[in-house]
Image (cartoon, rainbow, N blue to C red; front, side, top):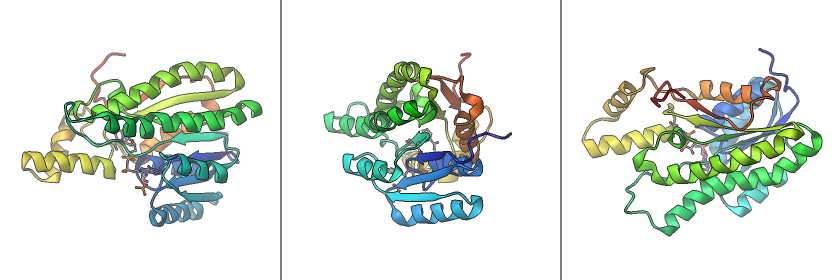
Length: 259
Ligand code: NAP
């Protein structure tokens, strides 16, 4: 399917690996020029070069921590006007409800709620002036179905979801859509880190922890960054202009709900 966004410019945050990279690759495949970001310069440059070489699009790489004010300022300065924004950052650590204090919550809120909000606040006005824009926030299936050990993530992402629900309706009259993509378990470093925690706790191997988790998913497998990126690119396409303020699950059926 022709997505109709060749020549557009996208900022894809936290995109040297995993789901962010999947989104960057799919957008580049549709002819979109990219501004990519991650903290580690080495992996970021490598990813940028691979995407440039494979797709012939322009790729600017900005190594910075997107969850800090300075990092965001640097990324936004180099990004300039963008038509498409994909927000993403690392997820908060797992733990126990009784262990988290104010500082833990502030950190999680900064990374997974206030950072995407700050990026939208900076970039939505330009999109609205130009009469076209797409925002996709990478959140989590935990917005629909809580993952108890990820209470910091459950809380911060629920806050972002509430913000998007209202804001998306305010910017829609200007040709700008905001939607959230909710990953269930996907085959990335983040999934490995979470599975390793389970393996260590239960005294089993990483492969066993993974197989056990896959058994709980109706699709009986983990999702891939490529599948995730394809859905992101569709939401950023010309065809998705009527999709406003939605929370779209990509979870292999893991959330057991009718709606
Ligand atoms: P990942 O494979 O660990 O990749 C994370 C990417 O983000 C890397 O490129 C990393 O590069 C970059 N990054 C992390 N923190 C950053 C920061 N502060 N500033 C800029 N870049 C940063 O993770 P993932 O699996 O793709 O997950 C992406 C998001 O989806 C996370 O918030 C995660 O919690 C959420 N999620 C994932 C799953 C899953 O199954 N994978 C499920 C539900 C939700 P650097 O380390 O070099 O910065």
